[in-house]
Image (cartoon, rainbow, N blue to C red; front, side):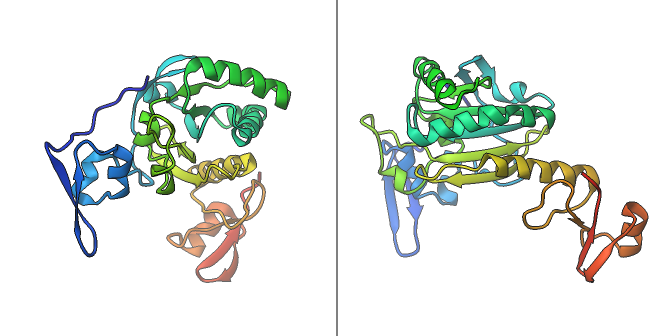
Length: 262
């Protein structure tokens, strides 16, 4: 069971403005319905997770015990990624792939943590299936979020899914990825529909890009991987870039490349 600071609710209803009319959303309406009409009038209902903001903290039960999310991250990078449900085909292939790639994330100081909208007993049984199917050993925690509290906190639902609900009236989660740095800031997000599996190599690639940018003061071009040329930021003068990086290749005054090695 997850816990976090509750969102204040209005006494009777929330007046929500749209372009042509005012909608009165009853106080007993599902939070997922309220979120679908979200405007500044209802921002207190849910934090807006923009890049650079602090990732919301929470306490939750996981397959490796109860955690306080920020304390669990510590001084590492973290990747929080969600799944619609246990024992689903796409999720099973994804978790198997992340489990196999975990040593590569470990080398980069990145901790992995999954989330699925089922309880711990189900998670444990599912992990056995994942290990058997993918011939791996899944060793990172999976959060139990059967009441969707963390999925809601991190906006891991889309508009369609506010009507695509289970027998309890809870919306199904989508496939979200949050890359969080040691300062607990959200640095990158990815969101996929439930029908589309993620690319683990791309998740690893963007971690490399973020960490390289932080460490070297550069930006990375399309399809960049370690060892390829990087871009000198527009804020750095060419003469200063040459002093810092050595050779600089100028394609245009605003587009300059250099190589910092692998």
